[in-house]
Length: 201
Image (tube, rainbow, N blue to C red; front, side, top):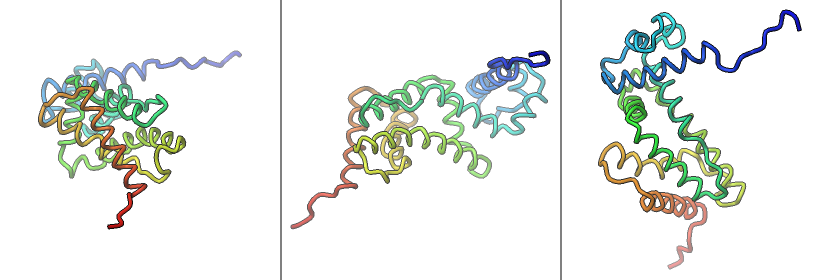
């Protein structure tokens, strides 16, 4: 039809966005959180700083978007047919993501950033992760592997704590036996809470 322009997937706006978020990760890894600035990211991405400021007026907004982008691409909600398989696949993707120094730098900085400045950004990041784990929990409830009122946040607390401890603090190996143990412990705890055993002396 005359006068109608077809919409192109991606386009310049998406290319600029991808370049800026990649530059954010590179700047963070190379220069550290304290030296990260919107202006330095713009220079690395090859765009004018006003282009960046229009979409990301603060470095907290920039850091949040870069962290969300990196984890959304690498850590979707698996659907393998069982709660154990789904959780193990999710943890495996988390381990693989954090093995990338750029992703690890983004997540570490978001977690370690000053609470007064980054509280909202941290909350939004975890809400996004809760949504992904929520898909796993909903499917498990539909298969009657879990009670329907299990909260995704509780599942994250059970499975992510040991992962963060090893990957960000102790540096111990995150291998298949470890993943299996973490998932088995979490599933056992969730099921025991929903169906407490006989406490009769």
